[in-house]
Image (cartoon, rainbow, N blue to C red; front, top):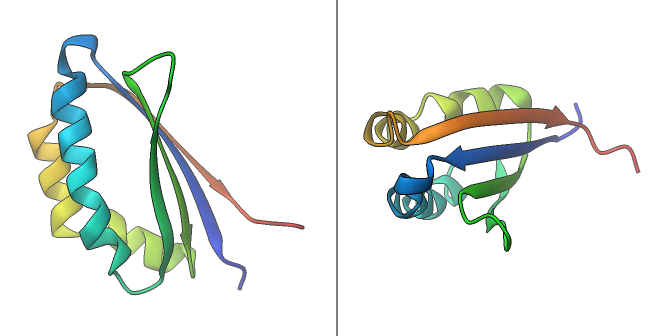
Length: 96
Protein backbone atom coordinates (compact mmCIF):
# COMPACT_ATOMS: atom_id res chain seq x y z
CA UNK A 1 0.00 0.00 0.00
CA UNK A 2 1.19 3.52 -0.79
CA UNK A 3 2.07 5.93 1.94
CA UNK A 4 -0.59 8.43 2.96
CA UNK A 5 -0.03 12.18 2.81
CA UNK A 6 -2.17 14.40 5.02
CA UNK A 7 -2.54 18.12 4.48
CA UNK A 8 -4.27 19.61 7.52
CA UNK A 9 -5.37 23.25 7.52
CA UNK A 10 -6.13 24.59 10.99
CA UNK A 11 -7.65 28.04 11.37
CA UNK A 12 -7.52 29.49 14.86
CA UNK A 13 -9.91 32.15 16.06
CA UNK A 14 -8.05 35.48 15.85
CA UNK A 15 -7.98 35.97 19.61
CA UNK A 16 -6.74 32.40 20.19
CA UNK A 17 -3.79 32.23 17.76
CA UNK A 18 -1.16 32.03 20.49
CA UNK A 19 -2.95 29.24 22.37
CA UNK A 20 -3.49 27.15 19.22
CA UNK A 21 0.12 27.66 18.10
CA UNK A 22 1.51 26.57 21.48
CA UNK A 23 -0.69 23.47 21.51
CA UNK A 24 0.15 22.56 17.89
CA UNK A 25 3.86 22.84 18.62
CA UNK A 26 3.42 20.43 21.54
CA UNK A 27 2.19 17.74 19.10
CA UNK A 28 5.33 17.61 16.99
CA UNK A 29 7.87 15.79 19.15
CA UNK A 30 5.50 13.03 20.29
CA UNK A 31 3.99 12.51 16.87
CA UNK A 32 7.35 12.26 15.12
CA UNK A 33 8.22 9.30 17.35
CA UNK A 34 5.00 7.42 16.56
CA UNK A 35 5.20 4.19 14.61
CA UNK A 36 4.66 4.86 10.91
CA UNK A 37 5.15 8.62 11.00
CA UNK A 38 7.46 9.55 8.12
CA UNK A 39 7.25 13.32 8.62
CA UNK A 40 5.07 15.75 10.53
CA UNK A 41 5.80 19.35 9.64
CA UNK A 42 3.96 22.41 10.94
CA UNK A 43 3.75 25.68 9.01
CA UNK A 44 2.19 29.07 9.78
CA UNK A 45 0.87 31.37 7.07
CA UNK A 46 3.09 34.46 6.63
CA UNK A 47 0.11 36.69 5.85
CA UNK A 48 -2.52 35.16 8.15
CA UNK A 49 -1.07 34.09 11.48
CA UNK A 50 -4.30 32.29 12.39
CA UNK A 51 -3.75 29.77 9.57
CA UNK A 52 -1.61 26.72 10.32
CA UNK A 53 -0.82 23.78 8.09
CA UNK A 54 0.48 20.33 8.93
CA UNK A 55 2.13 18.42 6.08
CA UNK A 56 2.33 14.79 7.14
CA UNK A 57 3.35 11.47 5.63
CA UNK A 58 2.38 8.14 7.16
CA UNK A 59 3.18 4.55 6.22
CA UNK A 60 -0.55 3.79 5.92
CA UNK A 61 -4.02 5.19 6.49
CA UNK A 62 -4.56 2.76 9.37
CA UNK A 63 -1.50 4.09 11.20
CA UNK A 64 -2.67 7.69 10.67
CA UNK A 65 -6.11 6.82 11.99
CA UNK A 66 -4.52 5.37 15.14
CA UNK A 67 -2.55 8.62 15.49
CA UNK A 68 -5.80 10.60 15.38
CA UNK A 69 -6.99 8.70 18.46
CA UNK A 70 -3.70 9.02 20.38
CA UNK A 71 -3.80 10.64 23.84
CA UNK A 72 -1.82 13.72 22.75
CA UNK A 73 -4.28 14.40 19.92
CA UNK A 74 -7.26 13.96 22.26
CA UNK A 75 -5.59 16.35 24.74
CA UNK A 76 -5.00 18.91 21.96
CA UNK A 77 -8.67 18.77 20.95
CA UNK A 78 -9.80 19.24 24.55
CA UNK A 79 -7.37 22.10 25.25
CA UNK A 80 -8.22 24.01 22.07
CA UNK A 81 -11.98 23.43 22.14
CA UNK A 82 -13.61 26.71 21.13
CA UNK A 83 -10.26 28.19 19.97
CA UNK A 84 -10.23 26.68 16.48
CA UNK A 85 -12.43 28.20 13.77
CA UNK A 86 -12.19 25.21 11.44
CA UNK A 87 -10.02 22.30 10.34
CA UNK A 88 -9.77 20.77 6.88
CA UNK A 89 -8.01 17.41 6.45
CA UNK A 90 -7.11 16.21 2.97
CA UNK A 91 -5.88 12.66 2.40
CA UNK A 92 -3.60 12.34 -0.60
CA UNK A 93 -1.47 9.70 -2.32
CA UNK A 94 1.79 10.61 -4.03
CA UNK A 95 1.62 9.65 -7.69
CA UNK A 96 4.93 10.86 -9.01
